[in-house]
Length: 290
Image (tube, rainbow, N blue to C red; front, side, top):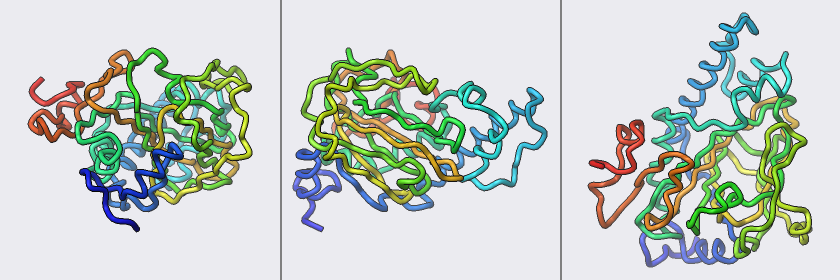
């Protein structure tokens, strides 16, 4: 690996140059199992909440408490259709402590700092995405993340995409179209075929798809990409849930996108005393002492 960049942060000069050229960067084995444990626990808590609701509604008898993390959600919804699953949303954004611990993980912030500096705001749009085989297992269409906040005065917003289980070609890993991050926001529409209403880039902008890069990645790795970079994912054709999380970060002097929720100050060299704690985040305070 090349020498560390002369600015603060953990990426090498070569990694920063690749990101700036291609619009994305893969960091294999960024997090350990211990570092992912809090967010996995939060996901397990969420699945337990859903199981309890299904049982209370008389839809299931067994909450499958002893089922493995990778298959429990799939087993709970095996008798049902997409419609029942999507009652709980295509992605989740609960305020559970495990999510804060992931958002504030130093290794993630160190990598982001190499790209945007040390004044880092954690964008309110973070998502937990369970891609369940057969039920809600479909592809996410080509899109730019920026299409979800077209009027926000914020660029760059960096997405950090992390699989919590191995992301493979079979279970629907991320695919990216390199060098598309320097484009403006492209025209797009809300797709109508999946029941999820994802934003989809208009077909005329998708020339050059022969350059698409598939990015299978082991659990604990991360893919960083600019919010204008075109990307998608394929259906889950496996027997296990493809769990992933997408986090987003931006410089503190940009639009905090309050219309999308409450983000928080994740790192500051200028004002470290203002960095939001877990208690601040749970209370939706953007800074400590605010």
